Image (cartoon, rainbow, N blue to C red; front, side, top):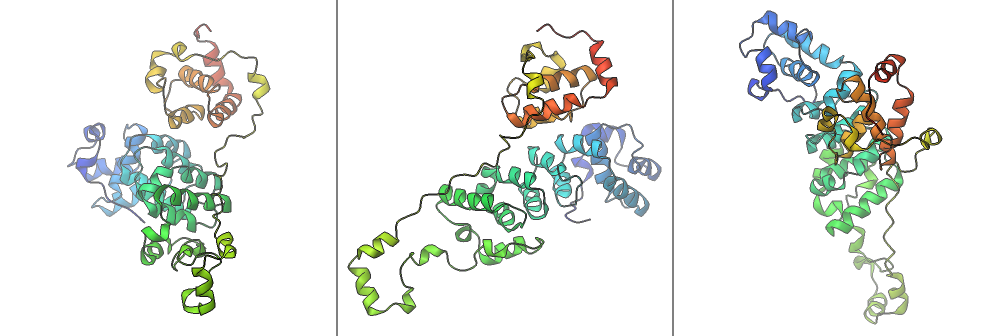
Length: 346
């Protein structure tokens, strides 16, 4: 298993240790490897990952098989949950379908930089690549992420140029000044169809000023002309303005339900149930609000619908549109349960 870092028993959450003792017999470990123990979502995934390095080959094979075949609904909850960074790193290095699942890894605060590098290498979905690029603090802290991202052939030229300029403006350096050619090649060597030209292996262009003659080819006349500060050379050196940051956030996405929601009164945070307020604090991060909008949190039916309705009027258009789309696609069974339950007064 690529990028697989085994978990030791001491790294398991206490809930899982209670169900699966360290000296559990083979029969119990096999039952766990088949997903037959009563575990919450993230503990189930952790258990399968842990048993993927079991000493017994039958347990190991079964755990790996079930880990790779996890349903999308299980994955969506697990990838947003508090789970081992080793597990997030492994999922970032395998082919996930739909690629939207990588967004959840990006949104998880426990995701390590190594997972960002893996996703920057392999992801083809432009939306996910844009989300990676929006984590500017990540690639400023770890330029290897940017090296992998810029080598990805599916990254738009606009975002590639913006990320390059952003890094230069905030560090005063180019990527090639921070990472050696060998380091860059090591990072991007397994990027399919890597855009090698975007990661220059030669000295940065600034070494030879625009409009000047390279030192080895300079003539005496050119040197004298340079020393005199000829107006033509000065004009050639005018610095072009920095390119504006591209519009990479989804802020103009269509909202087919805008007219319907225009005449509906929003829910205030104070009107949410105490259970929902615990899960979605008033200053909840966008990742949590988006998880509510897409019904990716383990909530009771009424809280699930109430949460989606609450973020259907979110200040962030991406969250807002996602919540409205989810509400319009609710199955009748959920609607019936919700409508039969008293709701807070507006």
